[in-house]
Image (cartoon, rainbow, N blue to C red):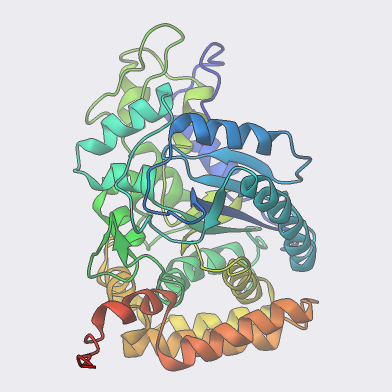
Length: 429
């Protein structure tokens, strides 16, 4: 997330113009070619992960990281989480190679400061603490606080793997943008379940395998919900944008106003507290966090950060295969289409399907069956996409270790907490 430029607010925009602008930019159609990934990480001390990090120590480490010649963009989230955002790559292999090189450089630099990257969907040990004090985050915190404490945990204690793929063809079919839009919201629940990796928050188990997804479901639905599943995607997204609450009205002087109950549609109609501009609309789009966000391309935001140095490879590879290989996309669509009935009329992530995916993960028989079919399709598709042996092996290992056994990474964390203690005997000499 970026601050944006609030000193030059651009041309004024009406309600009709805003709706047309959103419809014109949300899906840039054409052959699916590019792939990208955004990786968020929890950062902690190498041997003492439960200790809070002094802000000045993080600042020094991140200053060193910014001096590195990375191909990915490096940003810092409100709680000090580190994010690497790759450039769009022409192939999955190119994306993986570029990000692996950047991660190697980042990890080496962090080790010199006694710090490591940890792949958790939520910080398992430390309570949320906001380190960045900027107008955007002040406004976001004030807005999210109205729905309860989940917003602060989402801002400061969560991390994800976000996969970015082209919108797809204008025409119908397995690679058409309308099909990919539907697939994202049904397959998304399967991805939540398969890659659930956040059963702990602030030092205790929550009862959910993806607590990160629970947090998203508990913040204001106006900011986190997908559009209605019915209707043409461009029109549905444009309505969703205009009817979403305005997070802030930016100002070059003084604090930003955080209105309550003001939608962008209301703002454009009334012109109060001032008339909105094209830049205001662009900024408003960055304050909406649905599980699938159309930004010209599709940004899939529902996957927890993964354990291990290269755990992120698996969701990136599986998601890319299931979207960009026509045969795998058709298989995945058929596997997840029955889940629509279970989702019901409520949009993701605020419906029973997504709730069960976050709480039960692959212990749910229907989600396990869908995941098994989707992973098998992805494994068949990866050679057709030119994926290297390392990527294919990582997906195969995950498939055997978790999916076929009805497990997810969160279960590895929970197992030691649920097993009875070993009863030892006192040995007398």
